[in-house]
Every structure is written in structure tokens, then in C-alpha cells.
Length: 321
Image (cartoon, rainbow, N blue to C red; front, side, top):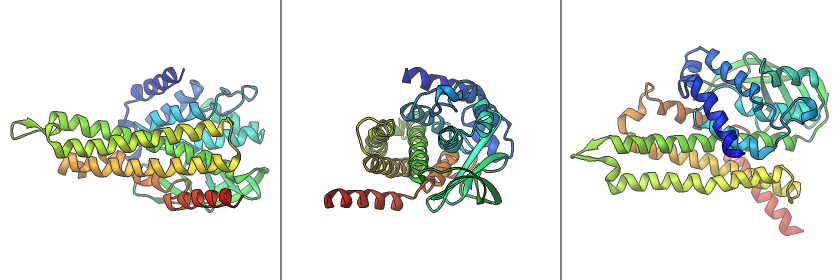
């Protein structure tokens, strides 16, 4: 089932042009990206975290992670975590059908801010914007889009509009952080593949550079980081789906996954740059799209420092008990 789901998402992105979608978005052409979002909605991906009764797929966080890792592999632009995970789950839980329906139909994107963890809404232009606070879920009003290190990503300040429902803000943070972790994992895996392919095709001194021990070590470092992060992401997803752990443990697992995937993407970016050499520093090379996306997502839905502190606080609380 999960293999089929990953294949479905991969097919959708491949038909649209793969990484070319991110480049088009960064250059101002959003239509290829919007086409991907519409096709994801038609395939039921947007509704993975929404009950069948509300028009969703009735799946769970594990399936969401599978889908978003594939989208990370092509650096899909736009508010991915918010449109495909956070907003559908929150709107479904609030029974806000008027807001949920266009999202599930692929007629709208969604962006979510949740101060202080993620105080600005990502890629709010043309998206339905929401604000999560300790007082609940609100429709939001975005203002003042600012550029980020990722040319395909902006962030905007958000003020509260109509209140839709009360909720536990922790649930929104956990969903956003886990979805971002899955995207970062996909980015790291894609950068590893890109660097490995280059190492096999680039020759120096009559040999493929991938045969050099130093290059092998660089790629091995990335492979280890990716494979050490993946079980943390899956473990957190299983916890969010309600298998056995209490809320504090699940949040701690989500934070551990967020830290590990951010570090894996960072290692992948640095090592891939060393393998690619000068060409990796050029904006014309596809690697730049992965590199800048990884840097932007590092702080999305909580910085590594914030999540490390949450893990530490959870462990201290557990020890005190």
C-alpha cells in the first residue's frame, strides 16, 4: 500500500516535470506547481488526514509521511506541509466544511502560522491563510510577503480574523513539524542521489570520482544521516496515529524527527557541494533548488534548537515523575 502511494505521488510529480516545477515557481510561473496540487487532491493526497465522512481519504500520519517524502524529492514549491497536512487536519477537526471543501477539491492552497513556533505563513499568496494560537484556530489575514533564502518561498506576517474553533496548538505544531521532517528527508535523499550520480559520471585522472575514497566517505556520511533519520520520522508518525504512546511522548518523538531530518538535509547539502564542486554553487544547477529549500525548511515549524529544548523538557518531566 505504501509503495503504491509513493508511486502515485512520484507519477504526479514526474508528469509535471519533477524539479522543473520548483524552478518555474521561483521564476514566477506557478501554474505547473498548482497543477501538481490539483492532481494530488484528485488522487486523495490532500485528504489523507481527513475522515471519509468529510470527503477525505481517512488515512493517517504514516501515509502523509510517505507522500511528503516523495514531494521533498522534487522540492515541490508552495505551502506543502500546510496544504497537505496541517490545514486539512485542523479544518476537518473543526468541521469547517466551507473551508475544507475547496482544499480537498484542489481549488485552493492553504498556509498556516502558529506563533511563536512558526510565526509567519509560508507562501500565502493565493492561499487560504489560517492562524493557530492558544485561543484556537482562526482565519488569517496575511500581510507583507518577505523573500527567504529559497527563491520559491516567501513568508508573511498574519493577523487573526474569524475564529473557527478551539484546539490544542500542540497538535498543529506536531503535524507541521512532522510534515516538514518528511519533506526534509526527501530533500536529503534527493541530494544524495544527485551527488552519487554525478560522482559516477564525472571523471578525473581517468577515473570516476566516485571511486575515490574521500568521495565515498562524503556520500556514506549522507547515507548514514538519512537512514538514521528515517525511523525517527516513521516512529513519530506511528505515534501520531495513536499507537501506544501518550501525547508528551509523541511530541518528543516528532521533535527528535525534526532535528534529525534537518541535520540530515544539512549534511546532504554540505557533502553534495563538496562532491559537485564549483557547479554546485551555480543557480543554474538543479542542486541549488534543493539546497535553498533545505535551508528554508530547517527553521519551518520550529528550529532545531526549539525542538531540542522540547525533547530535553520532556525527558526532565519524565524523570521527575
